[in-house]
Length: 294
Image (tube, rainbow, N blue to C red; front, side):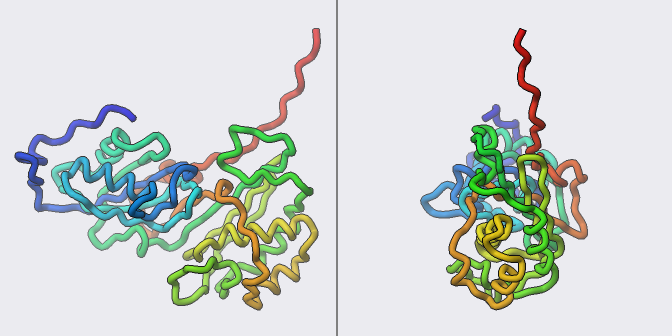
């Protein structure tokens, strides 16, 4: 953790906050979810929201609520999560990135901060969210890849079959089959806007973009999609499973380590693409030729 960024002298007087004029500050957040119990603040467990709110409170001298674009589960990563919070106008909004980064642990970074209109909301102004799931298929384990992928090498996977199974999901559907118990949503309907399965050498990645995601949806979907890739489940059986809302047939969730909230889309967004677009690198290590004996 770096040295805290200096703050305006007038922010506090005798330990009491001295600010009345507020602005809404939006931030783009990256985090490695391995050691977090998800995004949402919890009373006893470490969370991303909790760590950032603690850092903000250390600056302002009082608690604030950080509103995120979505809630990631335990162990899930984010390349460009978006959130907002109220702050005094005496601190320029763009300075909050360096201010918070000097107070946050190494597994969270604020890529940028900007002022947004008071009616702009990280969650309710969002038009879509996009997730990427990464599967590492090489039988040889790799320590540098393990935190960000599912090491699945037991049987070959057909990305063609997996893509064929994903295609019918495009559109507005009831996806009860891919919703974990405990959800507070009144319905399980989701509009899938983009589905894609690709192979890059030893990696298979699946990207899903939707207006919103159900509780545990991507991990449950991936847990059974690999059965299609292995040829155990047909494309038609996979489609019938979710169309008939057969939640009892979806018994296994893929590991959290492979899942990353890739980005969030807005009609009006104050950040340039290099801050938020595709900031999780694709794992694609071309095999090197073995050394030649001399």
